[in-house]
Length: 304
Image (cartoon, rainbow, N blue to C red; front, side, top):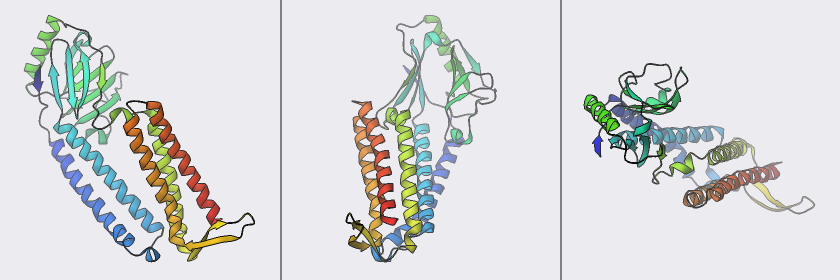
């Protein structure tokens, strides 16, 4: 199999600069939060502003991580050809396009929707989309779709940008005329390094999003109410409602901390189990949602 590197593009360097700038902004935003939490618990300046600052820092850190992923994906992108098909590799993943399904090669795709949204143009043009004419497009190009090669199949167009595109087209046509030796199955063969199958599971995605939102509601509410709480709060009561023990108010923040730690534990177990039992991995993430609801109820019981 001959290996074809993609054409060089300024988008890779733009993504690298954005990654560095956003990562620096995230660190700059989170440093004051770290300093505040480095104080003794009794002196923590907990309030809604600190919550918003921490949330912003984590959001910037997540965005920087997304750009970092795209940088590595761009650096590892390449195309392969043999008698049986076209292969697109990135980050250990492989997209297979059987040779018998390739109808023709278009020089550039100009239909509306080929470019995707702005975030799908960082590093390289990536992701699936739908063109104005209704066709599905799969983007794997480091150059604008107008200058990319469009590999047309009965159901999809694959946008690629190999160096020496004329030689690539010539070799592709030669292999099409020779014909395949074996029939391949089209689609994505996911690598295991980034747990692609786990993160793209719809049940897992929805459970994780819901769990994170519930956790943020709990943490944000507690931090917003924290300045108005008394120095000592009642954590346990008897059946008649009389307080059994009072603790410093900062201990109420252990509820979201416990929720986060249990959520991370379930996430790690889900990643480890998904290949063997996807149902079990999904149930773990749904359990995380239930735990966040229980912690919300516990917090409401203490505060009301």
